[in-house]
Image 1 (spheres, rainbow, N blue to C red):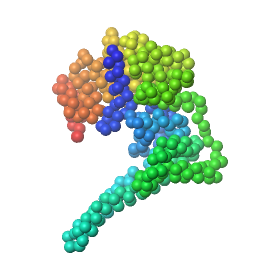
Image 2 (spheres, rainbow, N blue to C red):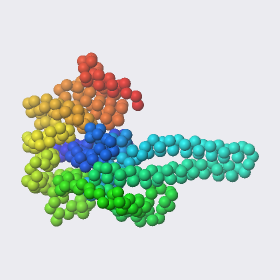
Image 3 (cartoon, rainbow, N blue to C red):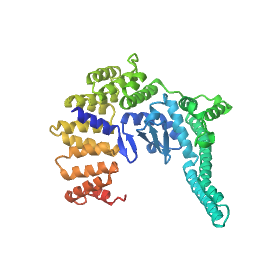
Image 4 (cartoon, one colour):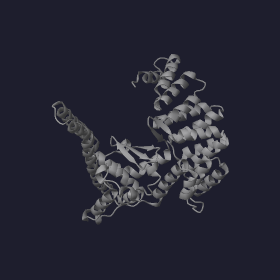
Length: 435
């Protein structure tokens, strides 16, 4: 049972999509979305179009694609300590979007490639024309360096502009842009010793010290200095602290967790991180004590009941696990990850109507957030319907970018499904995809 549980934790917290691994977690995604939504609104992005993706990577990094899809690395979330600092990070990334930097960078790369090719052609010409061969070779060797320096300069200018646009976004959203100062001060602690030794013209970002000074100067201006900004209430801060604790509890090693959340720390966040770490490491009794403490403190928190459901499943207590997940869903409807977790337990318990209920839950989860785990669980729930189970596995492998296996299962499914049924059409769609 514990081996199965460990596998599910691994799948849940590392969903592979090509070269990037994503974390699908209702609590993390919803809390982060709630925090950054005002900045997105200020950038002209409607709430329905904003999508948050959590990248499983230790880098202190984030990026925005298409203006609406925000990618935040776990390394960033575990280190950024306040909601307002997180807003500043996203405001900077959206500043790139508002500045049209992606399009400009693509054009700059194309221009520099043409420039490099012309320089290389000049180098070839010098050699062919009978000039100094070593001079021609030197010009060719320098072509890529010239292009690289030009692009680095362009990138540094974009970063400065994104900082400025990001500060303006924060002001427009009504939140204090001093979140930028928090982020840059934190970055300076991490990179200061290294940055002091590098050539500022050889990197694609301005030095952190320069960015910090630029923001401080801007914040000292009259148009910002005298403004009154909204502040995060205790509830928002607490929810964000729990998100960070959850990530650290699942992803950090034991020594780091002990440093970040020592046993002397009796806060909800510390207990959450330690309970998750204990469950992850097989100390179910310790995890149970922490989980019950959390529930006694916040009886309306659905994610503490989700943790209880995880824990009871690890024990093999299917009925108790189902009850905990069901209560979590009652407290927070439309939670695709919790619905999927409940479906997993139902397929394991396999009581009367359990698989039918599991299928309903998986379909609901997939409508909200189609994940590999939801399709994998749906395939288990369809164990008595081989054709639909094969289709579900085709979708699972398709989302995992394992094309050969997706095609194999789609073919098997299509050969047994009723023509023009939804699963038949979806299987056919997978077979028609170009890779």
